[in-house]
Image (cartoon, rainbow, N blue to C red; front, side):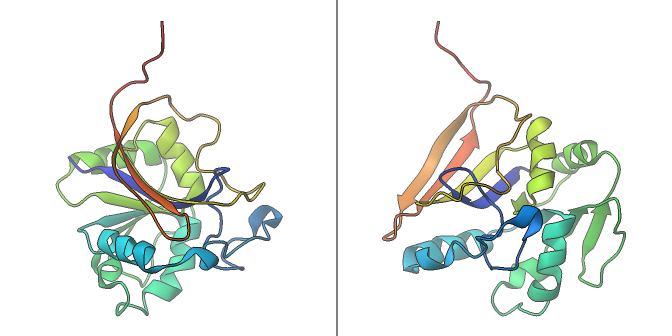
Length: 197
């Protein structure tokens, strides 16, 4: 069974919006885009490259796909796997792209992702894709979180965990702290939430 692996740059107050650039996603008036830049170092780069070099297909929301489409299609030298990976895109408005291979998922995206998980193939990596993430979390479809937690607060913006997240337990399978204070942690699903008596 394929796993859904969520890979996110996240602030300590839970924001995932526009980590890479000032104009990446200004929706909702978000003005702090590019907030990961001051925290780049060799350790973070090494761990990111390791993740980027694993076998994967992509599961993206339409907005993230449209941010990535013009850039990554021209930068195979940086991340060769992004162009050969199948890109599954949740969208009710797009049906095609020159950036191939791409498959557009409309309608009941949760049902379609559940079916994808049952098919043979590499894990499904989710980057960005804030709206899609909320659907995946509401339908208990996330198996792994690979988070890069930055030592900042942003105050507002798109959050990883919003209303509707299903209670669940996870276990830490790997963690590291970079020289600039970024905590990189892998959480794998560990069953249902347990509470005290």
